[in-house]
Length: 88
Image (cartoon, rainbow, N blue to C red; front, side, top):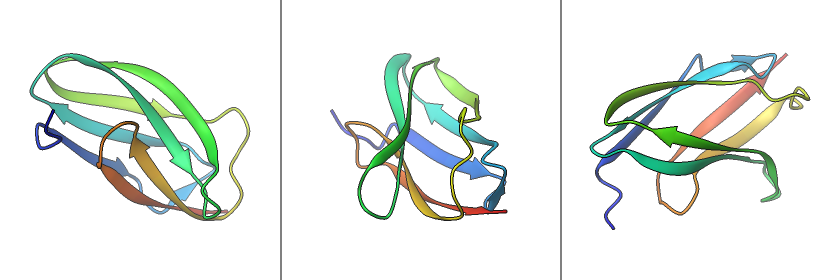
């Protein structure tokens, strides 16, 4: 299945206190998993999400604030990702 039916953007980015919104546009309704991956390749946050057709606004608020750094925000099982910068 091609990934070009989904687009991703993060706001705000850089992020403070690990709270941000992922805007995901999808041509079809589907279940996905959203992951935040640290520089060492570890998944530090993961949440299953049901996308609807069109724009989806998903509030990402990890229970434990993530340390300052650069992360990869990824839609699992796809090549779609966005660099995520967390500042204090």
